[in-house]
Length: 610
DNA sequence: GGAAACTTCGATGCA
DNA sequence: ATGCATCGAAGT
Image (cartoon, rainbow, N blue to C red; front, side):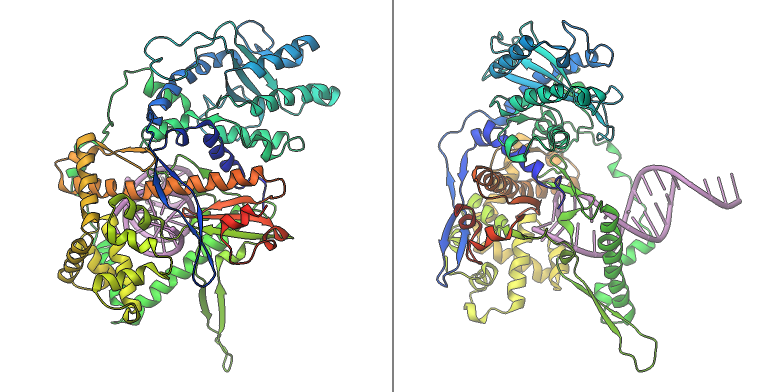
């Protein structure tokens, strides 16, 4: 697969791990992957939930300080315009103009630095801080502000706790590194070598590197210094990204640019709590067209009454296959590879998202298409399309997938402390959680649980988690709303603590205005106290859902970081992260590395073998 | 008035 | 019922 795919994002996340930001240092709980051997000899990856004692300052409090400190680069960006670069003093110093003595002085200063603030400069003179869109332009260079250790504390009001970085002072060095392929490099390769030395040293330092859109920054550097650097070498860099910090404060409002961030947090008084931009227009009646009314009646129910609905449904399925997974995927292909763009701040729940293509949404199950042959005596062709098999690993490599089992349910069990639910996960001999759940809840022996019962249990569980109403559940299960509400009722009765948990979560949200995930991420929900019943109940469902889904996302990211870290440390393992599908990690690894482990071993075993 | 660009919405896929 | 991306049709 393409080099760009996957690994860079992991690096960012691993950076956070080492810097203790935003979650590791402040975590309330710790999670580790443990192995259990089942009765049939198979290994299983188990994640016990343990609570940690220390609860230190909220990581989000600290991220706010980050905004203050990044503003200095913002103020300085005007001095980075082309033409002024050669100037000295408060303007960036072009390191290619330095003498050998000055060069070694600079390297020494970098070694001593307390922090770096950096951004890429593009061909047209804009930087990552004032360009709106993704960098389509080629990169001209990199500006780095090297913060000196001897800084005085920051201005009052922002020094309450922890380390902060002062605005630029005289001891700081603002340097410019040309990275574009130019005649200079060809004439004097020493310049390229030195600028690389500077960057490399910066990335090797364990002090924070502050960079807006850090992922783009690192990825671009890796591309520019393709031969000199391996992704493993920058894996331990400590990178802080204000965009992610802003997202941590409130995942709902997206920040289009750094300048918007500055405006939001500095150029007007910081308003506490969530900003509700909702206007009062929600009461306006929406025009419901007749055709949409018909579609609500979802064609599903009409299937048995007439052959047409089935044909329409089949058509839609096939059409999706062709348009998205064949044509769409082909459009994303470059030189035989596809490479998704990963967004770390694109969701309100804390998950990652991917686009061009959305690799997280590739069809799992194959679809068979009967191609009618209108020739007498000829049988119809059967074509099967299974989009996931379209992806093949490099020669000598193989894909390795590892996923959590029922992570959201485990989270729910832990958060609600529901004894019945917890018990389910503590018994290793349980083969299928929903079968067991169905037998437990209906009070029938496991052997008598039918497929339909299991399916019902599964749906009921998730409808409780997400707060579906009886109508929705009835629709889902194909039963009457009265029956559905009876199901919900009996579920609530059986797992009382789950119900208590949802009630408590909503109550907490009403009081504080936000909900918190297991690792301390917040989601403000302005509508939680709204008058409008629809808006309020939606916010209530979102509150419960955030805690469960968001906490699961926290764990998945941590697993991602930990596994990445163990590969980085390993001298032999080369497994590269290709994709993350919420609760699943997909690697591409050399085949022989997989062969050293038994086929059915857990991912924990696999990586510990190295 | 028609063409083209843009937005919205519902259906589909994933978890 | 939650929350992502993507496509085409329909509306603007």
